[in-house]
Length: 291
Image (tube, rainbow, N blue to C red):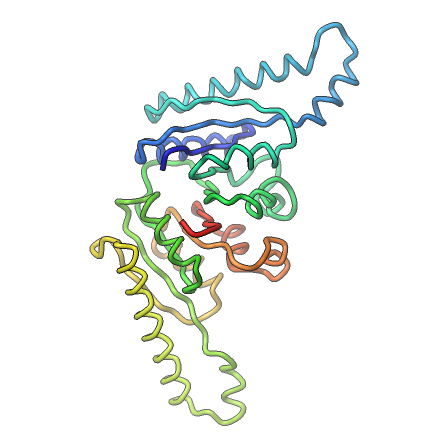
């Protein structure tokens, strides 16, 4: 990676995200850019309300620059990484998306003024996850060290290889577990129409063997270090299995591909990515395109 952007609203969660971005920056030997966007419409409202000779809006912008420089200095003391700072005015989503066009990774805090659940349900973070073409890291925990245990759920879509590649890139020395979750189609109905438990068991085992073969192909194609990579294939509903596995393994990062044709479709369909984002305890990296 060459450039990592951490967008901040000065909340505690956003500061943790910026610290995580700095840790990744140091490991990648990249450049860190700290970005704060001030809503131009909100600034216009301030100008209209405070009709004084002093430009209150300009002072607010200057103060945001000062606060951002303080964040950069504090991060530098903790991590040794001194990031550049940039305060922009405009439409928040548009300005962040514009900034990420030349970046390799966008890092956001899981909580800002609203909970992550609220953010996903219709404000800046949802739109960014929908439209950003770069990988987006949603940081949920105060960073203590580099990522140590990474979980990569795969479904063998084109996003699976991208997720594995990005996991290796962002956490090259971490132990990585590749997880595939499957279920037997129409399992309940198969029993109703007379399929035996033995036939269903054999069908499940064939699915598992096929998934294991595909995982080994992914590992080989990604040139992952086999000593650092393990895998597991489990049956069940993907979202709860992924969350339970992450908890059991004490994962500090889940790397998952975005699925579906659009984020709104995913949202109302109750997608795996959406549920993992909303309910996981650890950081989540969403890979949006082939990398």
